[in-house]
Image 1 (tube, rainbow, N blue to C red):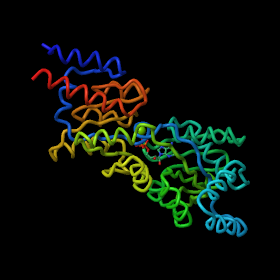
Image 2: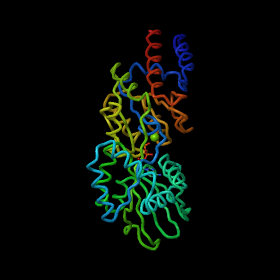
Image 3: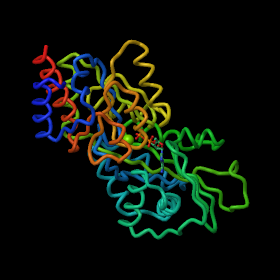
Image 4: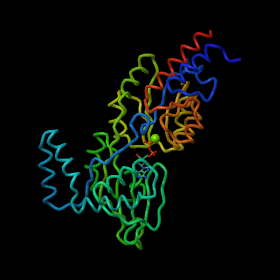
Length: 332
Ligand code: ADP
Ligand code: MG
């Protein structure tokens, strides 16, 4: 029979928007030493927006402008970036057009950010004839005039596209915590993908949740180690982790590998709670000792979880932890 104190804990939890899908979940909290947090939508708000568009292969006048911007102080440079982003020049408009065409059928939050940006800037784009998405990497599409690849730098490199000309911009944007999406194109659809060339970058930012840093502090206060896991690249992941004071980061983890990373921690003797929101996180939520789905979440994430947090607050994780550990102690 379920001890009375646990039922009481459950009621308290429900009042705070913490729903239990498994009776033992709360009991396990006292053994948990590691909480693995997905980045996008769990630590961050999950509503990414385009911050900057970079057209590569600019003319010399543009390059000169950029050198000048480098000598400005941070605030001035920010203003400049924002002004630049508000009025797109012809090359930047082309980058946005290509990216939007490729992403129009994608359901990824990064795709939404790109499409919103295209609409806000009245950039018209053709619907592709063919579309294909590669989970955790990006999308491929073909319009009447172009074959387009939009995705993470590592994926473009993997497909044989040379990113040398883009590397400085990629480093700069990732270093400040943006997710960089590369836009590559072959002008004629008859050409092979190998001939594709990177034409621009879209820097997308997703601010961390208001209570993220405070929740990480609560974990550290009770001796629980927070770990960030993400499919995003290491530089961006580290910049975000630094903002919330997480020092253990697993970056560049493909969706299917998230589960393996959890298993590896468990094999190393850690008891692991995993917090995530996406379809990508479902196998990891199932593998963890406690799986916690957060926010509106996807149905699949919710079905794979032991605990569901109704709101977007990351603090719900530690509310659940505290209710779980104190309820269990009452039953001893
Ligand atoms: P996370 O683990 O942070 O939730 P995902 O596993 O969904 O992220 O994606 C990992 C990375 O793959 C993204 O950061 C992005 O660089 C790239 N990516 C995935 N889908 C797309 C897409 N539709 N368009 C552009 N880039 C994408
Ligand atoms: Mg996610």
